[in-house]
Length: 345
Image (cartoon, rainbow, N blue to C red; front, side, top):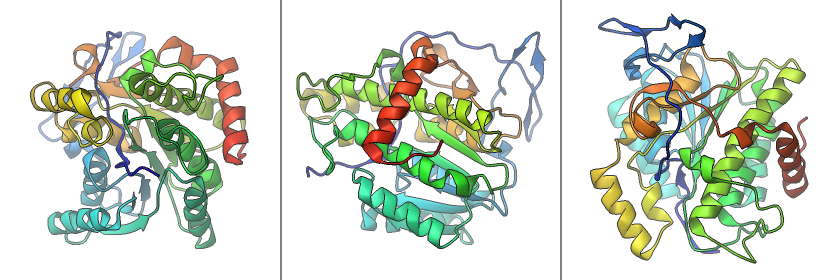
C-alpha cells in the first residue's frame, strides 16, 4: 500500500457558519462559564491553564506523534493523566514520547504502534487493551489523513474514509464497554469545518467512478460528525455513562496538510499554513476542552470562536444540518457495521 502519514485531524478551507456569542468572566488563572440568556455560551480565552487535574485518568489518543495529537498528549501529561499514544511509525512515535518526557519528566506515557488504515491491526490493538484490562476513561479519535491521491486500504476501502471514519468507528465500538467503566468517560471525535461540504457517496464509497481529493476528505469528515452525533443518541438510549462529543481545530498548521496533498495542492497548503493558519497549540484547545472541561454535555461540538471558525478559543459550534439527520445516520451506522464487522449497539 502507498505510504502516507496518518497524522492529525485538522482542516483548511473553512466556510461561513453561525458563530456563537462568547461571554465569560475571566480570572488571571482560569475562565468560568455563565448563562447568556437562553443560550449557553463558551468560555472566553479558555487555555491549557484551565485544564483540571487529570491524575488517575487514562486517555487514549490516536495519531499522537505530532500535530494536534502530540499537543493533546503533552498537555494531558502535564495535568497528570496517563496517556496511551498511538502512532503508525515507531521511530516517530518514540521521538514524540521522548519530547514529551523532556518537558514533563514524570509523564505517564505508553506508545502503541499500529496502522489505522488496516482494520485487522485496529482490532488487534483493541483486543490487547481488553485482554490486558487496560483502564480507559477518554478516547480521542484524532488520527487522520488528508487529500492524498486515490489509495485503498488493505481491506479495499478508500483511504480517507477508511482511516478517518471506519478505523475510529471500529475502535470506539470495540472499546465502548471498557470506556463505560471509566471515570467521567468520553469519546471525542475530531472532525473538520470542511464536513459542511461533505456527503456520503453511498454508490461510490471507494471513488472508483469519480474521485476528488477534497470531496472524499469532506466525506470522511462528514462521516465523523454524523458518527459522533449518532453515537450520542445511541449512548443516551442505552443510558450509558459515556458522553460522545465532537471537536474541530479550525485552520491549524500541522503536518496533516502536507502529508497527503501533492503538487500544486501541497504548495497551496504550505503557503496557507505559513500565512493563514493558527498554531497547532490553539487548534488542540478544542480537543482538550471536549475531553476535559467539566461542564460539557453529550452531543456538543466545539470549535474556534473566531470568524468562520478558522481561529480562536473553544466555543460551541454547530454541525451542518444534514449531519443531524437520524435516518442518514442510521444508514451510515449500519453500513459501518457491515464494513468493519464491529457491532456495539
